[in-house]
Length: 134
Image (cartoon, one colour):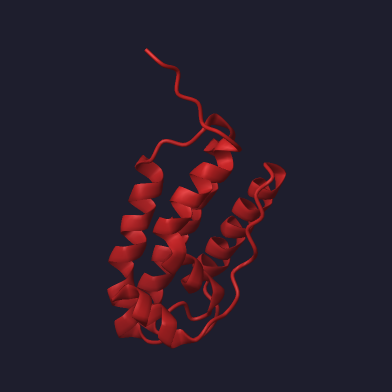
């Protein structure tokens, strides 16, 4: 038998793999309202739920468990924010969107402590979010 070792930073490797599944979610976090309209919000809910389940079910290195927990909270609150937008429209910033953003900033903070730089989400064209969902 051979020993398998991950070369480099295991948190970095885990994050690069995880980030592939949450790219659309990061774009949604950058904007308020997260989706351009209520219909798009409804369409994005399954993608965010799927990303949350993937992150929650994927194994993470011991040093990334706290990051994974914050990311799951972030995605949970993002899903709630999209549901609020789908039902009520975007009138004011909802607490759930603020919580989602806060948890993602905590993810960024914990990643930075582990030597991985993840910038804060920046607003992009609303059209891009809808294109990524397709």
